[in-house]
Image 1 (cartoon, rainbow, N blue to C red):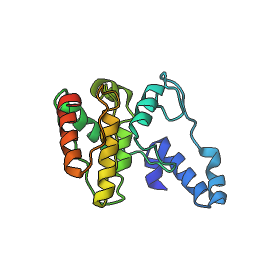
Image 2 (image 1 turned 120 degrees about the vertical axis):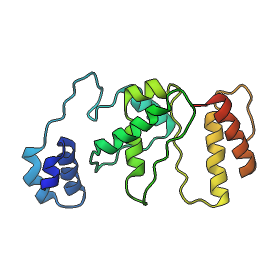
Image 3 (image 1 turned 135 degrees about the horizontal axis):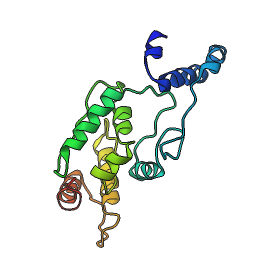
Length: 181
């Protein structure tokens, strides 16, 4: 409880929601009166502070939604944002790594929920793919899907790549020519 009290209001709300969803309604009821109000100022269009622009870009790009039970980790999210901003106009990558289940996906998706970051550094949107452990057939399907998404406005309607090597070559060219950022 002391850790939750040291965090921001979102932590308290997340703890309350976790109690509700995990079957501890009686404990959640004890905390219900203390739930902090959610402000709706600053020109944001929703409870979670995301603008409709951000919601649209993230939805179109397939970025995972914020989990029901969510605890903010602003220092780690800011570190990812900083790394993304350091890329500037140059092509490059930011790699987030760690043990399975440590929150890499949630942290990275949260970093992208920033209107200014998306507008300044990802004007063409984002394309999120989860690869994980895949056999060759599953990996080929993921690569074909990404090629299709990246070529959606291309004047040449190309057939999907037939193998992993062809998909890698097509994605390499797309990244270099069409999506260098």
